[in-house]
Amino acid sequence: MGEKATSNNELLPHLFRLEYAKMTAVLCRHFGLQHIEIAEDIASETFLKATEVWGINGIPENPTAWLYMVAKNKTKDYLKRLTIFETQVKGAIEVSEFQAEQDFDFTQQTITDSQLAMIFAVCNPTNSTETQICLALQILCGFSVEEIADAFLSKKETIKKRLLRARTNLRNDNFQIKLLEKAALQSRHDAVLRTLYLLFNEGYSSRSNNHLIRKDLCSEAIRLALILIENPLTNTTKANALLALMCFQSSRLDARANDVGETILYEQQDKNLWSKELIEKGNYYLVNACSGNEISKYHLEAGIAYWHTTPTDNNKWGHILHLYNQLILMEYSPITALNRTFAFAKVYGNEQAIKEAEKLNLSEINYYYALLGYLYADIDVDKAIAHYNSAINLTKSISEKKTLTKEMERLQSKG
Amino acid sequence: MKEFVLIFRLSNNSDVKPSPEQMQERMNWLGSIAAQNKLADKGNTLSLSSAKTVKPDNIVTDGPYTEIKEFISGYVIVKTANIEEAIEFAKANPIFKIGGSVEVREVIKRDE
Image (cartoon, rainbow over all chains, first blue to last red; front, side):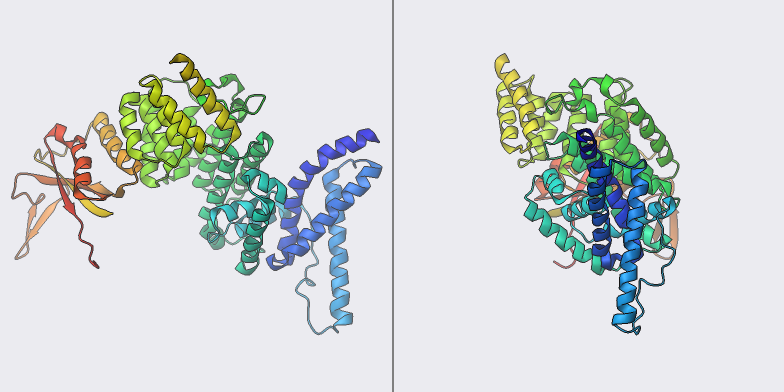
C-alpha cells in the first residue's frame, strides 16, 4: 500500500499535466470556448476520482484509457442532466447548443485535432507577452498557478489576475475552435510560433532557479511544436525552423547546470553531455525548414544554434556573426545586440569588440556588464571586476549570480 | 531622433560583385548600427546595369544620372540624435577603401 502511494505520487502529476490539457482541449472543442470552465470542471473531477480510486485499488493497467473513460462518462452525465433541465424543467422551448452532438469521443485523431485547435485559440495576437505565456502554460500545458508563479518568479496573485484577464479575452474572442480552417490557422500562425518561442525561452533562459520546471517548459514547447508539424496545414518551414532551434538548444540542457543547479557557461560545458539525439533531430528539422525560400528569425536562430553544436573550426564564429548580423537587421533586441558582440569578439578579438560593446550602452541589462567583464578580463582586470560587480547587482537569478561571482573572484585572485 | 539618409557614391562604374570580405565588412558595419538600434531602414543597393535616366521630351538614356562623375550605388537610413552622429556612422563605412564617398542628408518629415 505504501509503495502504491509513492508511485501514485510520481505518476499523477505527470499524467495530470499531460492528459489534463488534452482532455480539456477535446471537451472545450465540444462545448465551445465560452464554456471552458465546464470542460475544466469535468477534467478536474476526472483526476480527482483517479486520485481517490487509484489510491485504494492501485493504478490501472492503462491509466490514460481509464481517465478518458471516466471523462467520457462524466460528460455524458453532464449532458443528460442538462437535457433534462432543458426539456423538462425549462420546457423544451430552447434547444440546447450541446444536444446535437452525439458522436462525442476521445479518439487519437480527436485529441490531436482538438489540441491543435486549442493552441490556435489560446495564441491571440492581442494578448501581451507575459499574459500569453501564462495562458499557454495553464490551458495548453496543464500547469498549476503555483507552477506558473514559480517559473515567472511572481506572486500567485499576480498570475491569477493575469490569467483572469486572459481568460475573459479567450471567451469573448469567439475563435472558431470546432473547425480547423486554413484561413484561421494561417492568420494566427505567427502568433502561435511566437508563443511557443517565448514559452521555450522562458524555460531555456528562465528567471526561475528550479531546474526541473525549466526543463518542463522546454519539453512542453517542443511537444506543442510537434503538434504543428504533424498537421499538413501547420507544418510550415517556419515551424520546422522553430522546432530545429528548440532541439539544438535542448541538446545542451543537461550540460548547462551542475549537480547543485549552478549555470555552466558554454565554453566550460562537458560536450559529452550534449544530447546527440536532439542534435540529429535538430538537423532533420533544419533541413525541412530550408526547403522553401522563406527566411524567418527562427531560421536564423536555428542556424546559430546549429553552429553552436559544431566544433570550433571552419570559421564557425564567422558564420555565427553573419547570422547575428542578419538577425539584428530583421528585428532589434538588446540580447541579440549583445550576442552579436560576443560573436564579433570571437572573430575580431576582444579589443575591437569592446569598442562595439560600449556603443550599445545597455546600462540596465546585467548581460551587458557580464559581456564587458568578459571582454576586459585579459585587458584590464580592474575594469573587468567593476563590470562583473555591476552585472551581479543587476542579476536576479541566484545561479547566475553564483556563476558571475565565481568569475569575479577568479579575477580578483589574479590581480 | 532624426533620420538621415546615407547616400553611397562610387566613381568606378563597373558592376563588379563585391568580394566575400567586402560583403562581410559591409554587413558588420550595418549590423553594428542595427545593434545600437539606430537603423531606420537597411536601404538597398542600386543596380548599375539595369538603369536608365529619363529627361525632358521623352529622352531616355542608358545608365544612371552621372553629370558629376560619381553615381549612387546605394543608400541606408539611420536614426540619430544629430547629424554629427550620422557622420560618425558614415566615416566607419568600408566604401572609402574602394574610392567611394558618402553623402549625409537629413530627412525632412512632411508633417513637421
